[in-house]
Length: 196
Image (cartoon, rainbow, N blue to C red; front, side, top):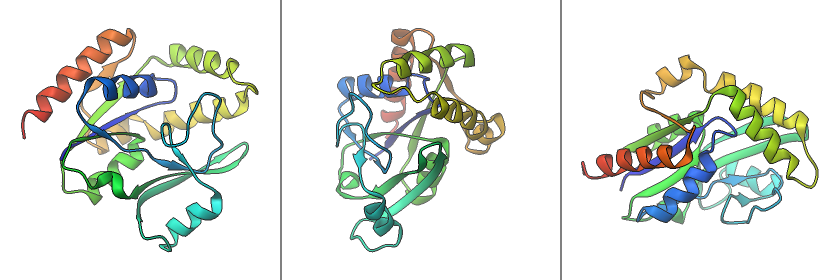
């Protein structure tokens, strides 16, 4: 089993690309866990497993049968939100797996698994990314612009050139045109999966 790991800054289009890749590839998906509130249009078990702070704490303390691989806490304007990768039934497969995460979680996954991870880093110029983020936020019942700004600035630090280099991310996929970017990513994945 190989793990295709999709990542990129907020509003880079990684969620859309992730959904389209799931449709086009014969792979299983891994759904992360989070304590953040569900957004308009999201679904439990599709976008994330939404859990309470208490349940997440049980994972962190090792009180659950499934073990936590990695987690990170973001201090948002609405309080702390935790995102986690948990070694649950989703990893018990012979099929290749696709998942969505951050650069930090990708690095921790590389240490945890001896399996090959295929990093897919999606980039968008910051101005265009900000336009997309504002457009998406306007579509919410209650726009959270302060959180949007916090996330935007945090991504600059989290996905800095230094951090990308440290994680060994060499190839980047520019998401200016969705179909072009998607086709480039599909070619890369198929090439890497065929090297089994």
